[in-house]
Length: 112
Image (cartoon, rainbow, N blue to C red; front, side, top):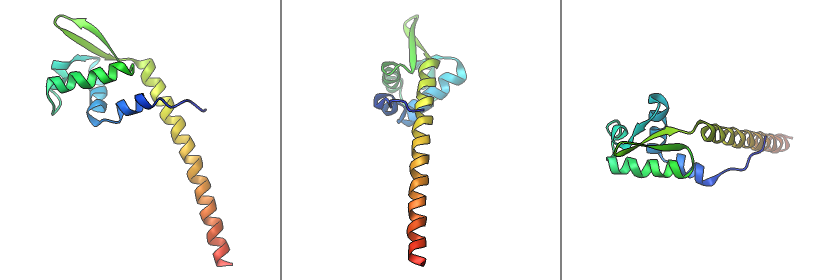
């Protein structure tokens, strides 16, 4: 399976705080910047900015909840990200197998 890799998506999930936010949202079924910041070593403002990045790439959806916004993971977009990761992993596995074959051929030629 070959998928186009979305660089913005991978840039968004490349940040460890954003990955922690996704984990918290998945485990808790959603949350606000305030509730999430209580479980992370960053400020509420930093959490809000990270959630904004995740929202822009479609990994989370925000709905108004009083004076705040409640965030939930967009499971379809997360599934797309997982599919991309699997595709990239399969490509690298094939490349590494080929590199191993070449290295083994070189080693056999040296021994002969």
